[in-house]
Length: 329
Image 1 (cartoon, rainbow, N blue to C red):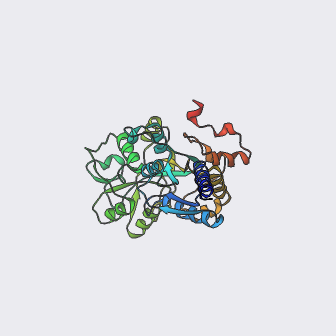
Image 2 (cartoon, helix red, strand yellow; image 1 turned 180 degrees about the vertical axis):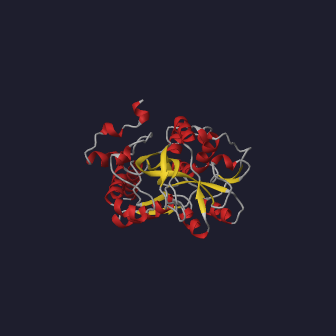
Image 3 (cartoon, rainbow, N blue to C red; image 1 turned 90 degrees about the vertical axis):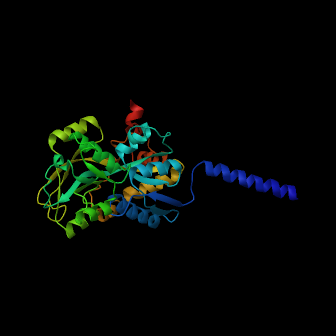
């Protein structure tokens, strides 16, 4: 009798192992956002509430991170199961280039959908003598948190103007601390790559007068020619308090990612929630999310999660439309 019970228990354990290997379905999903004050955090909090309320099988928990690069590493390490990241860093991690050049192969996650454009914003005080990016020479400038998407964008933009870290006093601050130090006069400017309107910049504009620097056409073309993920981006006037003119800059797409350990059914459910509740997301977000199935698969250079593919195909999209640029090359 004892042998039979032992054999039965072993069968149950083995079956549980097999089911687990087919995809994680614990119901608890850790979502990597970023620090307070950025659009990732607003999206993460809103999306997590939607997923948790719309499907009782899942409980999504938002984790504070340092942003895109951290999210990609945390996904690879299995600490989080979903996240948002910039498309340029997502591609760099996949190819092991730029800040990921000397790291082990990143992977274990796939794309779900492109979400919105993140504007590369450069903030100064309104009464500052800094009027152009060139004027940042010899100034103390926050380029974002270390190894963040903002830092990479900031360095690339500065380089397009012939400025490197020996010509600019670069410091690494998160958005909230950067805004506070700009207000207190401890730094002269800060970079922020996020959907506009960005909460932390909006709050700063209520406390003190600010301006955003434009990126001139020549430098924008140089950036777009060198890095394929940059696109033209305009921050409309009155986006922030006291902003009287449109600001021309460049931007990159934000992409929603999911761990490959999440089952296809789970990711399909979550992808469906994303699109069926896009209006609620739009109401909560300060940025135009413009979610539709066709635009959500454009510009993605890593494979799509099987669950996302199942959703898109159910919507009538051809599998060929979901072929990434890498797969088609």
